[in-house]
Amino acid sequence: GAGVSQSPRYKVAKRGQDVALRCDPISGHVSLFWYQQALGQGPEFLTYFQNEAQLDKSGLPSDRFFAERPEGSVSTLKIQRTQQEDSAVYLCASSLGGQGVYGYTFGSGTRLTVV
Amino acid sequence: QQQVKQSPQSLIVQKGGISIINCAYENTAFDYFPWYQQFPGKGPALLIAIRPDVSEKKEGRFTISFNKSAKQFSLHIMDSQPGDSATYFCAARRMDSSYKLIFGSGTRLLVRP
Image (cartoon, rainbow over all chains, first blue to last red):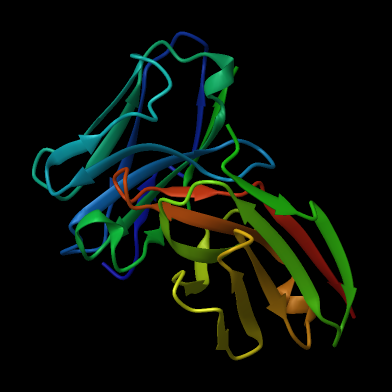
């Protein structure tokens, strides 16, 4: 596709509910990153995939957060038993080269609100 | 911990003026310093970037100045326009850790007509 596509654009979840956020990267992009952006803050790194391999998950805040990219293309970020502090915009970015070497293209994000 | 410090938090500039945003970093393992522009409801978009072996880079009205010894870099927007009103983030990429980007806290720029 022309850009990085994320769905849904908005998600309201009741506390304790599980959610799944989808990212469709630019076709052929090797690297895929997930970031979390709290209101009024800069994005913070969550996890990194190179093709289907999850090479870095050091930014995932707890074991309730899980990400996968099984075929090296579409990625899903899953949050189990959502808490109010999980409310944020979740951004996906992809890059042509490994390790984001050619720069990232970000999607518009999914705004998650936990009530 | 905040590895990239950005200032000011907000900035108001008259149309045609110069907007200057500053960032400072601590970690010497950064190898790439991009600036991103973000409009409400959109993801960050790459504006301009610089590597530490270059002291200045200019693209149109946007210039990055980089001071390696001081560990500081700045974005200058010349002839600022109302359409430049957005939030700007500096970032630094860690070459020792998955090449992830560490972002500053952002500067909200308002350019008055």
